[in-house]
Image 1: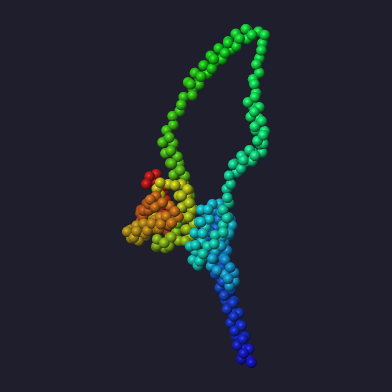
Image 2 (image 1 turned 180 degrees about the horizontal axis):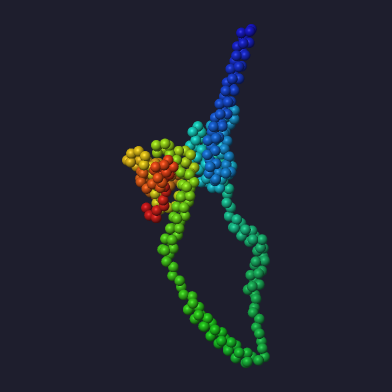
Length: 311
């Protein structure tokens, strides 16, 4: 009897320990995945987005659930792509809401038309047609006729003078549409370039040490760059990769070319046109700081974007 009791107590103890171990492990997994998912909040477009894991306890899964709202469908798709790259995540259930934009102007116009009764509109139309201009009768008909002729003559002379002045002053202004189009394109390219430069100044695109592999922490920044490039619709995007002067010059050039190529590949995966992107590696050429210091070498290891006018 004592043996059976000990056996039952042993089984119960094992089950309790297993449950506690599983619960502890599930808590660790949950905290780890949710911490990694916080990367989405680095993008200000996702300030109203919340992330949670599907299920709880024994039913806990590695599927992330997106809740909240975003402004556009593109931002909704971008949120999913950011979380799918997290290691350990099996799926992303995107439940983000995108507000619908309704044509308010058309609704107001239709309401105003409906408020006006059809019978009233028809009555106004008939009354306008039946209005007759009153005629003025004067006893001194002959004098009035002479005065009317004089007034008409004076009015004609005044109108002729006014027409001559208008024809002299209002000469047609010729506009060169090609120059306006060119100026518009140049302004658009300048604005795009400023946006790219501002984003790259905030933080650099990071790569693994001595490698061309892009760090996952730079994915949100690249996603923002792709959105800027799509909205600007440039004719040609040039990606230039640079390194510091450490090591072999040939190796540095190859490394900078591979890094530029990987950036190009990432942007193409976001829907940009292959023909509109070119990537070049320059190695240690064109340094922007001294290679004698650690800070200077860090600045020289960089990726630059430039908008060109023609392909």
